[in-house]
Length: 259
Image (spheres, rainbow, N blue to C red):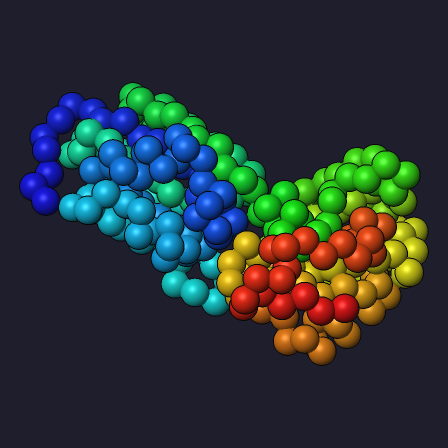
């Protein structure tokens, strides 16, 4: 389509949720159907991309370990440039833009450039994948608090406050943790979390390829190797992972639940 010459369009930072298009918000769907250009991430599912307005331009700007990745500064600059060509730009992100999605960085860049922007929240992976796997992140008598942690720098000395995460009655959800599983297992136990604490992996959550595996903290690394765990996957640590709930989402064709 022919790009429009405008002083400034509007950028919507839109959360696509964890995979299932049924988890899109009404506002997110409306943005996709009105967009002139969509810049999307690696974890946005094909089913969600299919909802983009026909004729809208599409640009891939995904990130992922072991995959070709766009630099964040380049993405920021590209969004500014597109806002000076098109009226309605959607920056489409898996999960929620403001939870480990670098949406804040993009918003700061847009604001500094004088580009109007908005954020459309999405269902973040922890809540979506936990629900589809039958794992309530809080539960009376078991978990009074929940923490979301990016495990990308888990091995760094200043990356994670392991002491606070090792408290019982506390659910911890690690994003981007597949490459740091041995560190998670060792550090939580070193700081006092019981090796018998239930754990769960949710691989490709909220998609037909979802797999759920449960075990205990002291066998976390062995379990990951046994099931050949692949990213994207969440690591959920806490007593709630041992409840054994089986929602309908764990029974649909193509979704595997394993103990």
